[in-house]
Length: 172
Length: 428
Image 1 (cartoon, rainbow over the protein chains, first blue to last red):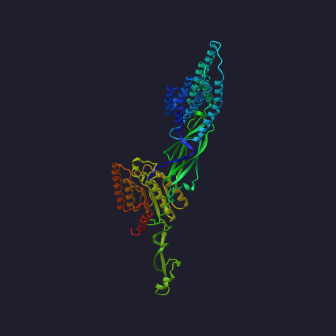
Image 2 (tube, each protein chain N blue to C red):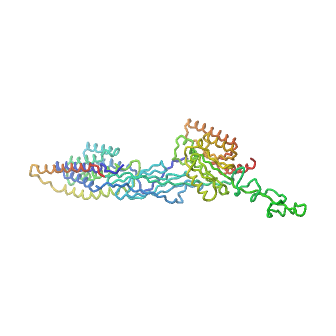
Image 3 (cartoon, one colour):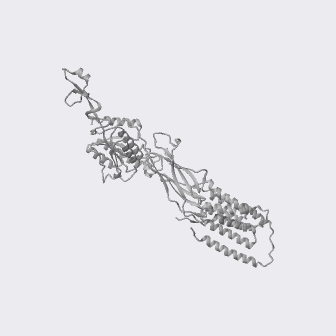
């Protein structure tokens, strides 16, 4: 029987390059446990869009929805959802970047995921600790009418504008 | 395309900043931490975009004993190619590996890695074994380099030399050395006659036993005469105008990715086998291609000439035939070995031309053994018509006085046919 000639690529453990896209959807499904239902549905819809067209930046949309969804319930040091949301938001950033540039028709070395996940872990460890501290420390009551806060917000907005302009400018 | 930053860093930073602002106004430290984490993640991987694409190097590895696909008399083998990728700045390198010009594999690998590509090689000739291009991807996909230039590796696969136990030779052997028996008297051949000694005969030719038996008077001597041995001029003409598989269904799609032997595989094998056998016999062999006049190998013999022929035969590939512009010139009296599929009338005309010029012609049919599975009724009808016309052409070739040898047949059948052709020389 005639068979088609196919070359074999031996590069260690290979997984389908669809894995990052599927992972974006899978991780986004955690939104059902982290945010209220309408927001969770939006998050999953965005993740599907991100899996189909990664350049739509849907993964970061999901991150925003999950992050903003935390406002729906009070922050409490004993609420696991806040810690999970922190991990999920960061993981979506990592997977979204990966999904955008790996050709889904091919394969990828499993070890290419090691360094991003290591980096994710090294950022997550202090971040989770910081989150515990932030949630544990009681909020001081503001004595003024918020003028200082407005100034700080204005400065932050300027910084945001500067960073956005810098990032948006194409550089080699 | 040049390397550039991607929207990943921008998307991460904007998301982080938005969360930060929301948390600032609503007084939610947990959301601020999420925003900060995204900003830190972007900052950690922020780098300049490298100007250079990834370096990709290809190396052909020696074949392993278990790579052969079984039969020793088949060119089927697996070529092993090592692909080394080196880009210290990249976290991932996206490779596009093309094997044999049509089998594309896309693999994402680490920035410094080595991988192996195993390419099945079932056809003889020169192949683009592997071609690789790569693009580097920065950490978290924040930058994408430009594509590297395509690195390719070409390899030549020699055709298999089949045994040719009997060699047809031209009717007139003009050479002074070689292993073929000429029709004239000389040295080295078989017994011709015993005749009385005449002036000019060598003393070493005197047959003393025959003299003692036959001589009638004293002083009468008899000499033993033998045939001379001679070399032949052989012109191998390869019709490289087409390259067809033995799968008639493939004639309609011309798919090069199938493992079925193709007509040029058979032609290379036949040409190499016949050239080797004739060179072993001390003959003068020349090679002519119908599509490339410049690739002609003039006649010669010896080890270096064998290498020249091998290189020329391996390099044969399909091209537009030039028979209408130029007919190959062969040495007068040479045996012309024509290797063709005989799927058009040009080859019949050429055979008739050479026969009319007095050449002995051996027409080698290089169409692989045919398989007609999975044909639509229309394809089957078309194939029948094409094959019927081809059978008519082969009959015309035979009628013109040429010998027709089907190369892709059982070895016994091929040897029997060659034996018949070798014997037929004296009768014609």
